[in-house]
Image (cartoon, rainbow, N blue to C red):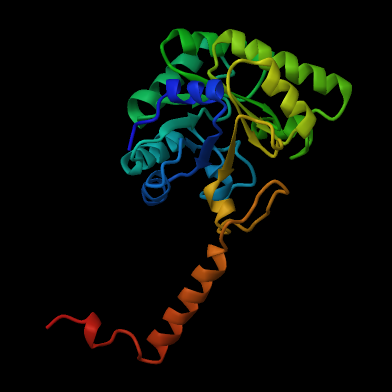
Length: 266
């Protein structure tokens, strides 16, 4: 299996081949999904919701991201590995941004970092990129700004937001990002952004015209059930399978059916 790199992802846009990305947070899941030749694995700060039980991503720390990146790195068999920079790890200063991005690369083993925001963070993006760390942008619904934007809402529906998102995408490209995630934006807007930048766009709730797609693996496998966004397609319902298996185990232990002779040592 060929190792995927930043150049692999850039080339896919040039030749019109769709990019596949999944978000995961642990060794076992990374091993399973990378065995199927996924292009990109993202260690998202959505770990806060999905694995740590927070209401949003804001409590997630750099240490959390490094810990989960290490785990995913050990299981990854060839996908490009990208890690989110969590809330307040890059907003305070350029020096902070470079230092924290470097930690995620050096300690965690990520191969690129992802930052949320547009024109207001281009100086951070450029500084991190100039430090030889590949950067991915993230526009539209930016979960780290949940308190500012008033919740998890579709972005880019009015003219001002529409124009700003296009402008932000172009500014991020100029600052050095090699791809942009577009989250929860109208399909028409995502199509226009995809056409006006030379770098790949990865959609999550952004319609059919992006250069690639990303979902959280726990969502698409039906394991995370606290809430399910409209854009999620469930390719399996493992949550119900797991619950049924656990109930079966409990019943067999209580009834003395497990362990059996084949499960014991002589």
